[in-house]
Length: 424
Length: 120
Image 1 (cartoon, rainbow over the protein chains, first blue to last red):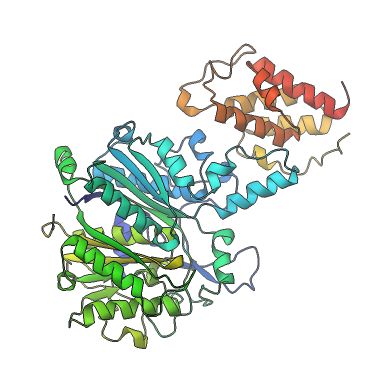
Image 2: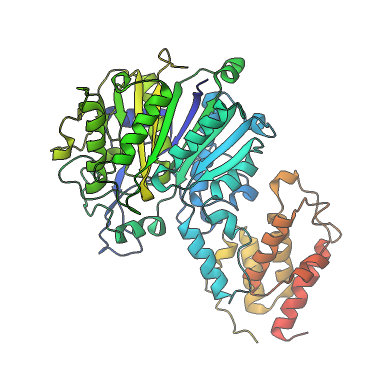
């Protein structure tokens, strides 16, 4: 049995609904803007993939606003971090597309929730500072559940009344790919018939600047080229925020409801680099093994893949490692699937990354296109043998391989198949 | 004795409350108007009531937080923290356990405010 995707929801720098995200992907429109953090124009972080239509910069929930039409009761929002607001908006879209009411999830022991986020550094800092100012005498009772990694599962699990399983994943930028993978496994093992998978991150000084101190961010000020995966000029990633939610179901459960499968989660694999706390293995050894395992799990070979949705974040080391891993897996067999890195448009929203790419794959299947690499000027030498179209290719892929890599050498790879091409 | 607060300072914790509640708090801060402080306590008790508990009954002195307003233990902790933060006071677990009704809550806060200013 292979689970199917029946709903997707997007709150991303390139759009807050499926139609605008698809348009951005088709036309190569980025969602990166000039930003200034902490009132310091001298910081080497000039641009970011911003989320539009929300005001969640304040540590106080009473100051927050979000797009109209999404009902978040006051006693729910009090426990949320800013990225939890994004998450609920994304889940509502995904449920609507899947034809599910929130009330159908509540108390259903066959529905699970799989979450990925790094937590809220901003709220953690604010709450701890407030506690210290009172010399430990008092603090926000919801400080823990609103700020630590796990805030998404605590809040969304309670809000939606999820009873099948509620869990969270923290493997940095591979987190939501892990969340999706383990959700797929629980469906395949027959433990559940439906899962909500969600990745969300906020974008603010506290979430992003620590990556500048690792010297992982682009220092460029031009939003049109700052994020340029696989390019010789790439100098680090561009931070981003947002949330993407998926509804996945056992095919029989989807059929019973009359829900239309948008894609099949054909297989997944993971492997680790065993190499560095932060840097990728120079030849992408773990990622290559993860891709091979995903293909094996799907019962497919490299020749069955039309498009690779690359993790490539525009860092010098990470992109080179991924390019070499892809080239070795496909190029050594004389294969040249198209390779696209959508972070050129979105920036890198960390934990959201894997599930965002999964959502983009669903759009590629339904819309019949494959996103290109619109900020690519001159491809780096490690990309030799890779087919890196600059513009979006107006052709429907049958099967996509989607990569994620996170700190500590976590690599997760998923294979998705278009309707009519299912492997299960 | 607490220093006299600057009435011009914003009150972040009260952002989002109706203007009359913020004005009541200012009257308490600047003039020591205890009736105004009571208005803030009542507004907070209504505000922190879980929405999932359904529509609120008319609130009187005898209205009970748990049974009538649908408060749970988390919402009680939030209300206590809010009042501690706004009025710069400490509400102990024993204090919280002794509060059953709106009148109990108001009495608890007002006794502490009176103790703070040395007026009682």
